Image (cartoon, rainbow, N blue to C red):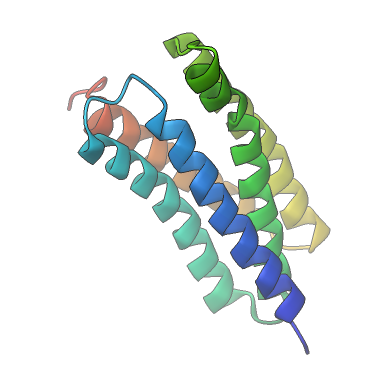
Amino acid sequence: MNNSKDISVAIISFFLSTVITWWFVDSCPLYNSLQQKFLSTGIAGAKWCLQISAAYFFLAQKRWGFIKNIGLTCLAGSIILLPYPVAAIFFKIDNASFFIGSLLVAVAVMMVLYYYSVTKLLLPVKWFWGWIGSLAIAITLQLTIVFNVIKF
């Protein structure tokens, strides 16, 4: 089976998503250092790498279709983030509410798209719940390690 188109779409989607997400993080004044920005972006990327790895090792015939779909889901979420860096850089609008609101809308849309990807390929819904679990862990890491909002 030739999966080259799915592989290409996945690579391009995740690459563009990484670039857009970095621009989003880099334009936010909530980050105090470059280290915080790298850590924040790394946490987001690790969540997707975990899902890609799981799909690669456990989905056999459906792996590349699913990886392509979640790549497009990731890209869609990143595109939703674009108004923030554009407004921050070109119009000097960079308040925390806009930043957090952008994140919330992006996550909500990605949740719907991820669920659609799971159901479209007739995968068990545990794939969706696994992603929700990794999302919860990523958010917790962001709030504890990156922003020190939650202290254990």
